[in-house]
Image 1: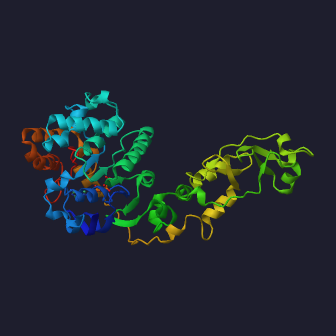
Image 2: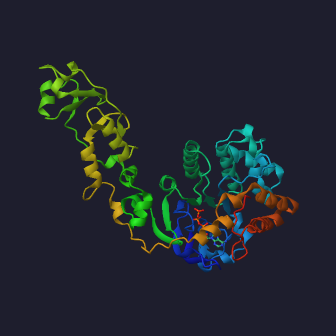
Image 3: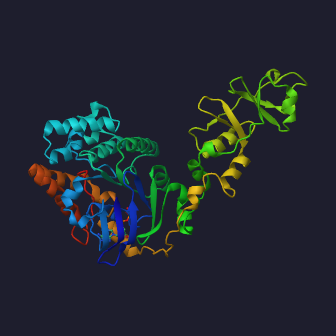
Length: 454
Ligand SMILES: Nc1ncnc2c1ncn2[C@@H]1O[C@H](COP(=O)(O)OP(=O)(O)OP(=O)(O)O)[C@@H](O)[C@H]1O
């Protein structure tokens, strides 16, 4: 639904921020733009809401060239979340969230009641409504930023490093909450991060950029991990991509052995006949009781007479990934992983070798989709020059510097002064002008990000 056709952005100083980008972002999905600093992620994101205008090519939204849509109208349907949330410091949490509905002329009561709903939606207690941003933690502020962007229920959300400024634990919580929220809302989300783990966790599709604004690969997380298009992507994705890839292989598809699973009333001789050092003893409902070490079994009788070693943890064939299965094998006293069905009954066991062979051999489990992977254009990496780096620092493009509360407050104040519907058109302009002062876009649209959540 968002489509880039041969889109480039060149700045007068000779920087190519985005180079002939062609990309189609799925409706209702999360597309993550990832890559090293200065590779054009933020520029690409801002071309979607016309904060940056392309030098060449076309960006279209649901089939319509966005140049045909007035920027204020376009932005009404596009929520915008930035690093550090960019909340208005002099407004309460509730009024921050109500910003866009108020600008749209909803009236105070309706806007605030919508804001209260959104507060709950992002997992914040109603008691926080009257607080000011400085009275919230970084993670809470970020939730308010997300709630504000959702104010007018826009179908599209642009998120620029929204979780980068919080510690890893809070970040994990925000990511989990975000996944939950998206399951409910099905927004079309473009999400910028420099963190490949975050990209893999959140993205339905991932666009990896290299310096020079070139798209290196556009793929699902699974395919990116299984088939990086070139050395640059492989390096960027990381050394442990094999292990991480297992998260996308369903445990249900793994081959398991049943011969080592024996009911407690089985004769000891049967366990010996299995020819393996361990057997798994189960009850009448095939629930696991524990491991029996064959070498330590009594001479006769049944497995009910044997001393059992506790199980370790099992993995679920219904919901777990191959990664959980491999983990279960590595931690198991027998080095065998136990797969159970939703009722907790044992389906079978496998060791780490069998599991990894199934996952990495010819015709490996979960590889069918990966086979469809298309090779991405493997263009040479363009190094960022020192001058460009200095330019980036000076303009503060995509950095916190442009996203100061002060800049956003000015935008807000301008908005407050204008009439409601009018201010919808004026806010982005006021904001761009304010921020543009720190080094604007060549088109005069301003390179700074706004904080009005739209
Ligand atoms: N207004 C501008 N004028 C000149 N060059 C610019 C301008 N804005 C951005 N650039 C350059 O365009 C390139 C891409 O910048 P962009 O902010 O899109 O990168 P990014 O991938 O988001 O980086 P980061 O992860 O560091 O935020 C950089 O080299 C940057 O210096």
